[in-house]
Image: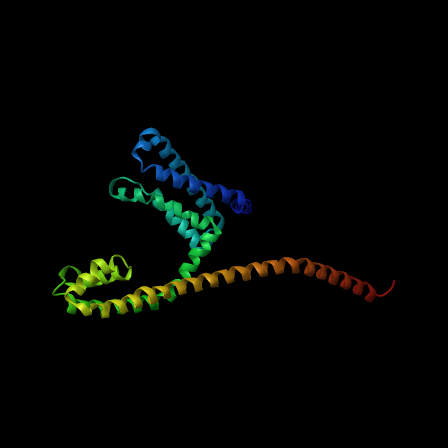
Amino acid sequence: MPARLEGFLADPRLERAILVLILINAISLGLETSPTVMDAIGPALLALDRAILAVFVVELMLRLVVRRLNFFRDPWSVFDLVVVAVAVVPSSGPFSILRALRILRVLRLITAVPSLKRVVGALLGALPGMGSIVLLLVLIFYVGAVMTTKMFGADHQEAFGTLGASLYTLFQIMTLDGWSSEVVRPVMASHPLAWLFFVPFILVSAFIALNLFIGVVVNAMQSEHDAVMAEAEAAARRAREDPILAELRALRAQVGALEARLASPPR
């Protein structure tokens, strides 16, 4: 029975069916945000949502039965379990806020599409490399916030009056959101040489540090791609070598049988 269930769960047709249900669920959850649609077909959408959730729950239970403890050793399986479990929690009373989290079921699309899974895996693999860059940005922001608070805080209380306000303003500058018209030019009206600070800050934070993030992510994506290609090449090599090895083993068995026959004394 477990073998049959495992074969059923590994069937590509089941995977495609789950993928279709995830897409349908995403559309239905989006339609639920429209009062007009809910007035027209609200009960049907809610029934569809419950039916799809029931399918997801049954599929996860079958995977738990087949894989048992191995289910929890697979991060993607645990991710599916958490996403579906959030939708199962009652959406009334103190847990009513969790009703909005039903849309998280759409994230199962990540585990259903191998290419998306590889992208997310690469991003997660890039997190350790991002730690040093984040620390560098924190140092840059802290030093810059202390400097701007001391230099411009007295004349520009809203933007640089406190350390927190300076950090937020510097973050706005890093994103290049109205940095010139809303921040730098008003400061330069009272401090003409303020550009000597802001221009290097933008160069370091927006163009250098953020591009380091991109470099780490691209490197992780390339490593993930290389690993997938190496695995595919190894699988192709095994597919080519397995028939040859099978023939060699059969030939060895035949030679061994022939040697045993020749070595046996004649009757």
